[in-house]
Image (cartoon, rainbow, N blue to C red; front, top):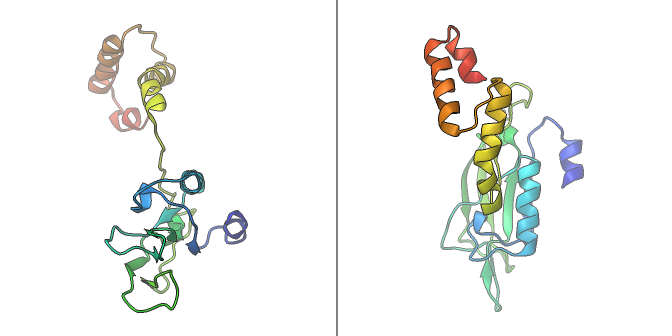
Length: 171
């Protein structure tokens, strides 16, 4: 998939894949190791899955059912695909037919529209977040406060007394 993305740089990409990766993120009951790896890959490559929550599964055989077939797209096609659904027609396979519509000529250039950024969090990173945020704010605004309350008061006064509030908010 990485080679496909490199080859198709700055153009719309759709990857229809039997991933054998299970993840609650794309509405499976469980998340397996492949699912975690694919979640991380998709996050780092700024990819999105189109799969929608459904009582139908994309895969079903005598052993079980799961959502292992994914429709993956890059940001350029994010608003171009509509009508994603698992078809009720027979596929002659244990994988279901997946249908969607692509709006013609609606792929957008990456340079003009920066991709959406998604962050993956866990308890450890969430515990570190307040301290990291405080440190970043202190460095950005050259403030040397010990407590978050003092820092908050200084930042509030910068906003209320500042001349260029838009630039300050952007910072």
